[in-house]
Image 1: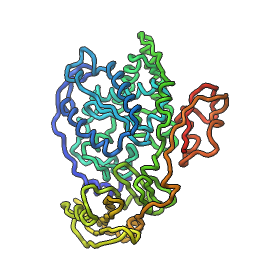
Image 2: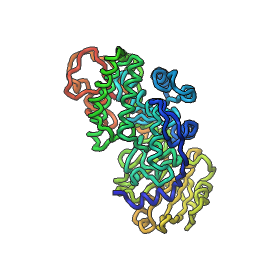
Image 3: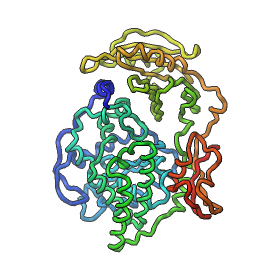
Image 4: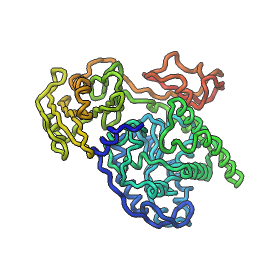
Length: 499
């Protein structure tokens, strides 16, 4: 059920705008002329505008070898796509594509209009050879070539209020909650949460297989990923967003992809390349799961080893950690606290007052404060009125620490503020330096990639204790195996380890 507060908060804190009009242009895949929500020039501009926001929000995975690899294979698959064929219009053929690896553990890949393709390191960990990577790459290029986002724009007006099903955590992409708390423009947020139709997804599946097959890859291998995605979906009791979406079912795609690959084989495409050795060497040492150096929650606290601070997380509250912010949500999603660095202010007071100056926010009171009786801070209470007249109360708190200004923005409906005030205060008053040497020295989990030196069941290769609450089934999934599957000496394995 959609919560009214989530809807109203979204309307208050984000103004959506309309990309108006439509264009009659060609579809590079079919070669036919039809209506699109945007002209191709608009698609190029949308991608160019959104890309910096995506990079800022999620961060790039800092590994030059991996970054070069995705560009190399991306250009290889792109060369076999409809975007580079002689009969395709010049404006499409000359479009440059951008390929990026995002630093998030969520298993995903997605494309934005105009040729922007993103893989997460979580996706990379779940692939087992280059052929699988090529099919996923082809799928995303297929979305761009078929102009699926522009097709959907005709059916889904971008100017209307769309809040990903309404609830703050109603649907997630890359681990982020709904757009009520995204630091993204409304158009970028809507593009990220855009649901393609079943026909769009099936078309991209077919294109992904075609482009990979034309490049010489064993395209049937792509089916193995969809089996993994089905297992992840079953494991967490929900579907996975975007290209892994609710449509079509991963089980259906597991059956369809080998069939399409065989059709191309019958037409003369040999499809022999898997390049498992190269791919496994690529992901050796890749960070797996959350990177605790960038912050993690444990025993009722949030710790950030790199920035050397900590603060308390109220019991039962959810915590979502992203490169640009930490979000805490009450169990029923009725209250929220957003923590981030304020790079624009020089003092806590300046940081608080910068928010107070925004239109629609009315000051109730403000005063000096302290965090953990040590760190200079400034605090304010304010109110804001939603479009339907509902009032929310905001607590704004900024603290100076380690040469930076950190700010908490917490809010709930006015009638609920007293109920959540103690939780808000617990968070801000507990902000302190991190001194625990074990936490300060913690290292991320990385993939140990090796060839088995003996025969045995898969579970027999797992350590007695896995790090960071990773469980054996999770490891089996990234290896595209069952725990009891036989492993033969010489086969590749990926095991998460922590130094």
